Length: 355
Image (cartoon, rainbow, N blue to C red; front, side, top):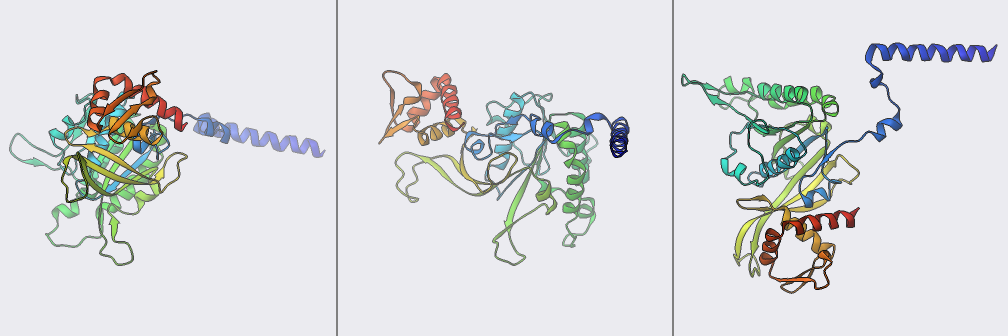
């Protein structure tokens, strides 16, 4: 009798599951093992950052880039856009601040700029001379719509800090409002959090770090509200930058030749198995963007794939009987420019070395 009752209970449970699957779809109910085995494509960002992000940014991620002004957040997002395009993804760039320049786009060699590959969303001037200023809720509506209607796309919001609400637009200058933009972002995060993993799209939100005037021990605070911190999968913050110079540079008083910036990043959430709180340095070359070749070169030195003896560099990773020796860092970079196949060999060797 007890066995018959148990079979009856099992049958009732199975029937209930079947009814739910019919109502909501069988794919809504999977085992934990199947969930763990689901594959997510990981899009590389840049060599140095990929090392602290477990390979890059997984599809379906909500990403935040924080930092002070003029430190390379936009350049990094454009560099990532080129990698996403190479993986067959379209990019939508929401030009909230209106500050992106043609030189920014021209400085990313691999970036495809046609509208079917890279679309800029912006405020504009009508033919009758009136302006059409897109407000915060409109930008966020566009972002949500693109994620839903174009699965696999990348949406960049540059920046969340400058999203202008209707209340702020129509109010008097100096009038205080209680963070209406943060409230909108909170609603947006709620609406989008379950959509991203399904659409396999990626949202990148650029925001500012400002001086903390609210008291406490922290010298700086993040703009955009707290809700973003709960939605984020991958979080990167630039702590500071320094000049990237070549030539005989002895100290800060020695100018050398300034060729770019060294951007110091620290990771928060990573979206993968990498631990948070890791630090690295990206190299942004003026007129070029993130210099992947130099970053691979720098990693190669760290992993002893490239030996350095004073000003001489030995390309051991080529595994030639007579190891290639080059005098001077810039000459070494030129060799990579002349032999792009060496870059791919080095990239492969690095991947093998770090697993």
